[in-house]
Each structure stands twice: as C-alpha cells, then as structure tokens.
Image (cartoon, rainbow, N blue to C red; front, side, top):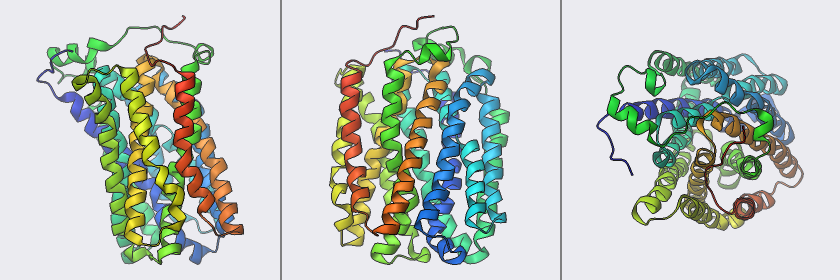
Amino acid sequence: MNTKPQGKIRWTICAMIFAATTINLLDRQVLGILASDLQKKIGWNEIQYGYIVSAFQLSYAIGMAVVGRILDSIGTRLGYTLTILLWSLASMAHAFVGTPMGFGLARVFLGLSESGNFPAAIKATSEWFPAHERSIVAGIINAGSNMGVIVAALLVPLLTIQFGWQATFIMTGALGFLVVIWMWSYYRTPDQHASVSEEELKYIQSEQQAVKPIAWRELLNYKALWTFTIMKFLIDPVWYFYLYWLPKFLDKTFGIPLGKLSLPLMTVYLLSDAGSVIGGWFPTWLIQKKSYSIDSARKTAFLVCACAVLPMFFGSYFTNLWFAVIMVGIALAAQQAWSSNAYTLVSDIFPSNAVATVVGFGSMAGALGGVLFSMVIGWVLEKTGSYTPLFAYAASAYMIAFTLLKLLIPKIERIELKL
C-alpha cells in the first residue's frame, strides 16, 4: 500500500462533490416534505401523487440511459457543471405550477437534469482517488444525499411557513448556482490541476489503469454490468419509498404536521448519514486492518446491510413515534452503506473510462424500478391505506440482491477488457 502524500487537493474535490450531492437531494426532497400540505391545497390523491413521483423517476431513468456516456465523452468538469445548472433551474420551475399535471412536468425536467449527479460524482472519484480510498469517498459523497434531506427538513418547513411553498422552491433551487461557480472555476483532472503536487498526483495514479475507450456493445457483454443493474433495480425503489412517503407515513400514523416534521426527519437522516460514512469506511478497514480481500470485504459489508434492514418488515406495526424513527434511521443507514459499496463495486471492477457509463446504466434501471414501485405504492395506499406490503418489500429486497450478487459475481476483481 502506498504511503499517503501530503497533498490534500483530492479531498477538496471530495468536498465539492459532497456539496453538489447535498444540493441534488435538497432540491429533490422539497416535494416530499411538502406533499401532505400540497395534497390538501392542490387536491391530488395518492394515485396522482404516485404518478408525480413516477414522472421524476421515469425521466431520471431516461437521463441515466445517456448521461453516463455523455460524461465519459465531454468530461467531468463541463458535464457536472451543466447538470447542476439545469437541475437548479428545474427545481425553481416548481414554483410556477399549480396542478398535478404541472408538477408532473416540473418533475420530468428535474429528473432529466438530476440524473447526471451520481455518474459524475463516481467518475470524479475514479479520476481523483486510488482504488483503496474510493469506498470511503463514495461513503462521504453518498452522505451528501442524507445531508440534503437533513437540510431540506430544516429549511423547507421554515421557509414554507414564513414565505410560502412557491418561494421555498425558488430559494432552495437557487442554492445550486453557488456550486456551479465553484465547480467550473476549480475542477480539473489531477494532471491538469495547478495545485496538485507531483507527490499527490503520483499517489492518485498509483492504482489506475491506462485503457482505451470501450464501446457500449462491449460493456453489455460483462456480467458485472448486469449484476449492478439488477441490484439497483431492486434497491433504489426502497430509497425512493422512504424519500417521498416517509413524511406522509409519519403524518398519517403519528399525526406529525409540517411544522413538527423537522426533528424526526433530521434524526432519520443523521443516522442515515452515519451509515453512509461507516459503510464506506468498514470494507476499507477490513482490507487494511484485517487483510480481507476486496471481494470478501465488499460482500461482508453488503451482508451486514441486508441483515440490518430486516426489522422494517414490521414497520407498519410500530406504535411509538421515536421507536419508528430510530428503526427507519437504522434501515436508511444500512441503505446508504449498501449504496456506497454498490457504487464502489463498479470502480472495483471497471476502469475509470467506463465507470460513469456503467453507473448511469445501472441507475437507469434503479429509476425504472422506482417508477414501478411508486405506482404500486400509490395504488396500494389509495385502495387499502396499508403500508404493510410496502415495508415487507423494503425489508427483503436487500437480501434478494445480496443473493444475486453472490451467484452472479463469485469473485469481485478487475475485469480484463476485450478491446
């Protein structure tokens, strides 16, 4: 293992991506927090809300189908800057609609533009960090997802009560412009960044491979791409379920209105944040301190996550608010730890010039899974009012995905590209 250099520019890049991811989820979560109030003001039902959520996820999936390839073609700096600018404008556009159809259209544009964040973030990680640090970085970046929801839980109720829901969408959307300026002015690849020392550059490049571009048809031949894709299809809908329906579940089950929603949501997502960072650190610790292989460390982390979510099978039967909050927080901590390792799995197996494409393809499948599950959620809640079958899937999906990973990838290792 190479000794760590004195240079820390790569960690500034990590902070930048963390900030972008925080804004990404903040903009995405505004609707989820306001859903109960907007439902009363605008008059949509559960099925229509499911369609509004699905509109985002479907457009997100469409964006994922192409955004990874675009990023691999035009580069991280330009691609990341554009996607942040566009999703900020799309978020602000929610302020100018007032019907279910209008919100659906706004979500379409938000989904298309937000689809670039995670492929760009993982691509930047593969450019700026050696392989053994990437799961830690992925965990930190993934924690930005939770931080975005925490910031939303703090800001959205306050802004809405003080200024109204339209102003809330405008003000939260405008925050993205700050990251746009930072990204465009500061981000470069390590070999082009003026502040990177020769020592840090050598360290960053110590575990990277120089490879030629790989065609789509070649990537589709690799079982690892399809394994990651299936995992995302199964697991991402669970994240969307909590993201968009947890505030509504708390309101319905425990009578938590908008003005008192901040503390329960902050608690849930602070736990989730911790899970994201610990989930990235844990396999690295196993590798460095316990001499685990990448394969055994990564799969051990996945198994721990799959076990940690199982109590949520009984989520609809929780009768105490804070017990429910803690259990959901543990489940989301495991979800984010899983996600950190799933993203790092791609960079474990594929070279950096294919990472964004693979992440984009898998994330497209995850969004499509979210589309289907969101429609099911809307139908189930409208017809039965019960969260029981929804929590049952949320608790079991991880163990199913882990079993498929074990079967389809007996050993996690770098693939030899057939060029």
